[in-house]
Image: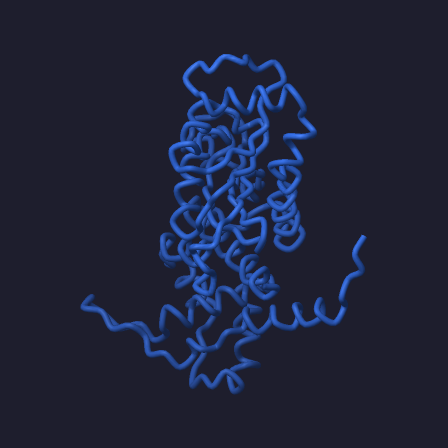
Length: 297
């Protein structure tokens, strides 16, 4: 086992805080709109930065207001938002914009060949789950599922989908691959048996992505509509260990490790009550997690 370079490791932890506390947005003027009413007092960039800091430090809104009061002079702010403003502006953040911030690393070379690992995990809800019963017509308390695609080299989340617990992993595979291709030159995709389907193999063949998906042990060697899957079945049933080593299937642990890091830092549940706010909370957490990973590049 390679010996850890503690000097480099310590520097990564220091850089992590520099990326989280990126105050380039502090002096930006709020965007003026043609909407009727009082114009915003704080810019979108500034409020997004405050939201990132709040999630990184896991502070409730009132404690975040106290933190900002202490840091008002170092931040160079004439005024700081109160806890109600922090809550209101965070709940109003655009989900598509947050999703883009999670996926896109502007410093990454999009032409570099990339291998991704896909996986999913469940996240508990803190309320009584009635909204889930009503929205998806189930008779029990449900939970959310986070589906991600992770760059195995940078450990960054490059695609994410959030669904209810009834959604099978196989259903969102197509969307994860398309989103990953938008900002990465994906050449290989790794996934467990949950993603074993002819449609998924055909999708990867169409995009010229090598499949690293484990097939069922009782799979037929007939093509049945997917020649690509047939070849993988024959190779795996012939010598699974050899196939596993050739495609680097063991690197799937990167996606599992990402979920482990996420839950250790943010917990196994969401605090928000409304569905959209739950998605927003998860996206902000994933953005923080990606910023931490980018500090190590």
